[in-house]
Length: 326
Image 1 (tube, rainbow, N blue to C red):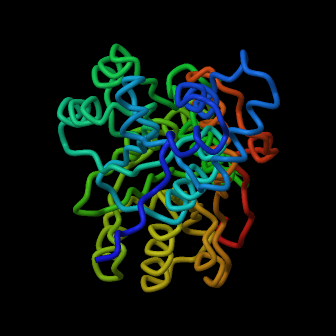
Image 2 (cartoon, helix red, strand yellow):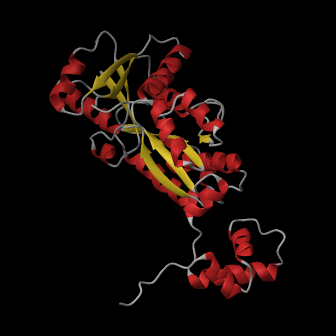
Image 3 (tube, rainbow, N blue to C red):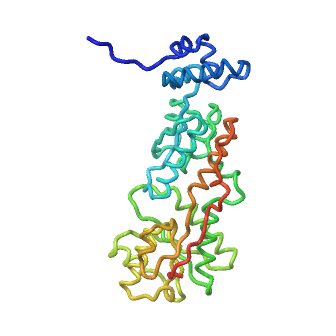
């Protein structure tokens, strides 16, 4: 029976390049400073010709870490923005010599941290699942966790979104601000932060404390929610995302409320479907490429590596997309 082909090993590269296996290991794992350029070139050429890739398992045994960057996602509804973020992270992490692995968190951050420690990742990107204790535990194991949501930026994204939404909703006069949160069987790790940003924006303007109501994305229950809202003053709805905003608009149309007279709405995500509504939805565009750029910068700094090139991280992360609902 004919033997099956096997992947090339470091020994194969060493034989072809005419060097020791240890030299191959040093050069291909970034410890190449003491070797002449001619030796480095021979080793890289041999590795390319043999299509050799260092073993992640072997590297993990030597360094105590894998080459994985684990993205931890809460068990929540994943919209287009989060999907884009994962794609951008996968592309940009390649520039750090790493692979991105997605993991959904459980309800207990401590158990999630235990599972992450067992994976021995190079770093963790947390999208809102880990509490301070879990982050500290990983840091104690030498695993950096980014982004640093407390200290890495002057203002957090939730605060900026709330400011943009409230500013637009009150541009033509004060309104009773309502936060329309997502109504889903899954957890909502972002809702409290989003409401806090809206509440702070209202306080800065001397407005009443904003209401908070979950809005289902089905017409009949969404209409029932809107019927319970006060009507003494015009309403301004800061929606969790465009999908929730469209549910609000559909319910308002059913009840023959004037938009934006009786009720103004601002969504988040700038989805194509939001622009199909008549009038087009006013919304907040989130540049996830710019957001991921800042995360990769933090990763590179935490790992002591040079950040991959790219100008997206210099762009403004949030932008108001004017429509006809305000």
